[in-house]
Length: 567
Image 1 (cartoon, rainbow, N blue to C red):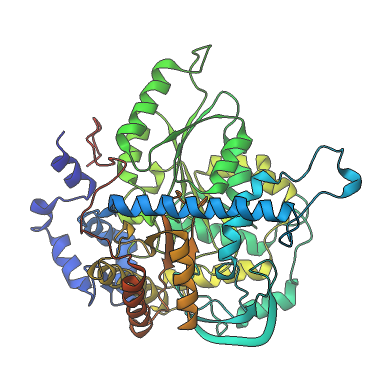
Image 2: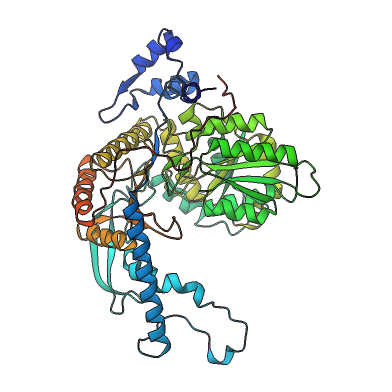
């Protein structure tokens, strides 16, 4: 199969047959082009119902080209980045020497004198990076927020007198800071009293907490309502909700696989997936990000060779991926992974923490984005902490899966159930997205997020800034490379009342420090333009405009495989 053929199938490009059908004519009537992108806008409630019923948008999205870039920086930038870290490490050792001899005051944790002969609980050398490099940038991290994390937020002003070892608050509040860091994709993080009436009523009726686990006295009618609505929203048989998104992964993966099973994990998977895989006791093998050739190689070897030493067949083979990768802004190549899963009789675990609500014509995640049948995904996981502006997570799929987890999941047995007021917030937002509230507010927000994402990414390309990820991903990393540059950038942006999130090692490769923007439907064009103007100025000052408009993919994810995608 040629790459061109694979690309056409992957994007669902049945243009020759589709253009002449009545469905295409109807789709043209239903959908209108937006101002900033090739995304579609749904204009009436009838259109929403027809889309859900007939799958009109699903077919249209399969024609959309999959564009994802990981542009390499010039070699001299990488060299200077290593030199920068070398200087920081050199000065770090010098300062440690001065602290040891009392020439500089030591603020770090230390073992008590009476415990010197004990096995140390605190390994001093392991904290070298945190003590001497991260500490220099700490004023740009962990900034205290004192308002709702909407399109704008308020921050408590703080200063340091000892080079970021401690901070003191001045009593002042920095108001109306443009929020470019929160996962408020659909803009539902708001404190509008009229919108929160039902949540206030639930809080009055049920209280703030459950004080019990699910299997004891912590399963309420509200939880059942949420689970039924989530299953309907995702078009699956059943769903189960949990009170914490991180624990949804870390406590349920061990319930699904164990010793004698194999987990194939994407190299960029979230820490919750990695922890869950390690706790399971299963064998873990990592494949290169979105690299289908590498994944198929591991699958073939697993099927042929079986388990180490005994060579018995694996009890289960579980492929673990994310919908949108939160540090790279990348979208999983779902159709190809589903095809490989079917070919090698493996199971698929899809984490949609960042993609549910954020992509897809009606906000139903990457399955809708690619037009993939949810029945082809064995375990659908997601969280309510991003697009739904709540907390907790869910597992969805076949009824047998959910029934099994109700009795075997550690979260169901030991963890406190979701707060009733949080459950009501999820119900309110999900009904809004589905149009159950009788308005198009939810659908308009899904459309607006797509518009803002396309506009912001296009403008960044025009500024010659290197960005990672998919053009439809609302997670937009802008590469700065050097730790000193991300710190200077964050401080300057705060002076301009723009709040950003900077990310560096060990959350990213050591030479790829970056600023991560999270686009929201609540952002106005004026807000985005202000951010882009400051980016343009700082890009020149910090010399980070290195883009050569190339689309080199470092993991060779587009190499041909011998799989056939379902038509």
